[in-house]
Structure formats: C-alpha cells, structure tokens
Image (cartoon, rainbow, N blue to C red; front, side):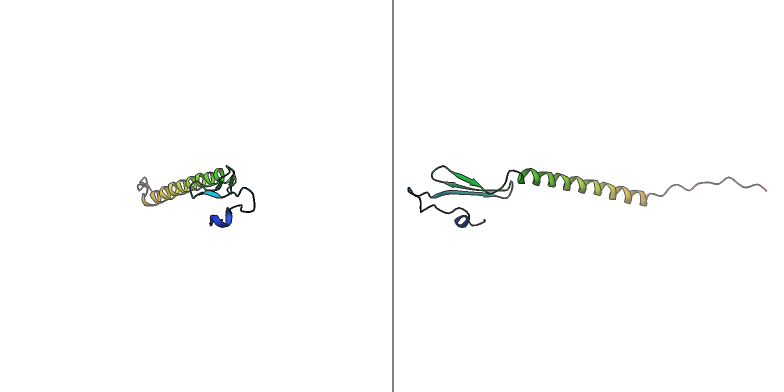
Length: 92
C-alpha cells in the first residue's frame, strides 16, 4: 500500500477512463487516501486507527511519567538517612 500505483490504479477499462489525480499519505495522523478525477476517493486507514493510536500514546506517556516519579522517590528515600536516635541512659 506504500506504492500508489499498486494501491490506487487508474481505471482504464471504464469509459470514460478514470485517472488517479492524487495520493495523500502521512504518518501523523496515519492516512492513505486515493483521489480519482471523477471525484471518488478511497481511504485505506480505518476510522478507529487514529483514536486507538492517540489512546496508546496517552497511556504510554502516563506510564512513563508515573514510573519516573516512583523511581525518583525511591532513589530520594534511599539517599536520605533518618537522623540517629538517642537512647535514654540505662540506670542500674
């Protein structure tokens, strides 16, 4: 589907002949659309792909931020030692 000639062929067998006018593609947001000179178009990326990609990105970023915060708190807790406690003198 990366080569428009294979994904979007000219329709030479029809009368009048329909030619490919434009092939739009992009990575962000994912899209791949063929446009023919008779006004028809075909979208190869389903409508649920973009919301799914956005949801996955938000979950990934949230997980990274939370794990970084926990790692930083864990390191800070290890480096700070509690002050020594004084024990009362034991009388005999």
